[in-house]
Image 1 (cartoon, rainbow, N blue to C red):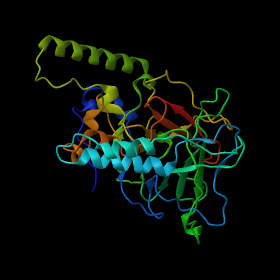
Image 2 (tube, rainbow, N blue to C red; image 1 turned 45 degrees about the horizontal axis):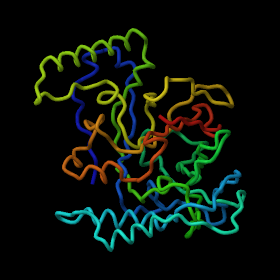
Image 3 (cartoon, one colour; image 1 turned 180 degrees about the horizontal axis):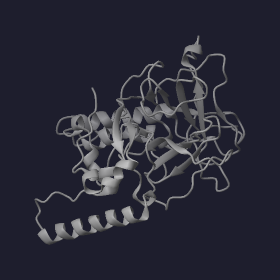
Length: 343
């Protein structure tokens, strides 16, 4: 089933014609639980990986012998989802609660060293044929694959992520790897994605307000303030919420490729290539939810009558404190090191 973004609550270019010069596009991926094949773009699905090529490993020194088992995490989600899906459900039965408690146990792997090879988790892969706003890869590569370490124990503060991106030519994979290595335990449930098929949809987007020209940003702020004051004066419970540039008119929530990054958590700061100093472009956004209370106007038409939580969090992936992870790439050379920011 396709996913369709509703029309925006108003035409923002009619209010601010200058925005036409900054208009861009982004591809909303709309991941939904399914059974993707290695030949398809997916989140949490099987990767098209050569059998004779080493799987990405985390070799940074950190604890890796204590955590939850990935199979238990998937089973826990299945049991809980089935319990709440029952008609007039009051939640899990006593038997299911006991099973859930057992599946939620933390396990220790005896004899594990902090430097033992740790398989990364295949988070997502995207074929250029499926995703209109996916940036060009090196040479004629058509497949982007993303992996991460299932522990946030990296960097100077020992709280950073360890990400690995790989471009490849899909037609060169003659013998795909059938059973990729998996970590025995993971540091948190949010590192384990549920297999999701994608429903890519290209939509119009505009930059974060703080990156627009100062005069235009000030006018948008003034318009929002006036609209909020007018709504407060009307004091009508039936009055729809006033559309906001940030949450309704510019940058959609959810997993998406290309477009503009949101800087709602921190002030915008330069995201330049560390190799050639070129300003980087947004490659991919990994969001903890497809929409929330502040961005509900972006809920696809096909999901309007669905239960909110499982539909809004289909991948079960979360970053930071329920935020979004923005990955940036160098437009000059896609093989230059990527950078990222959590908002």
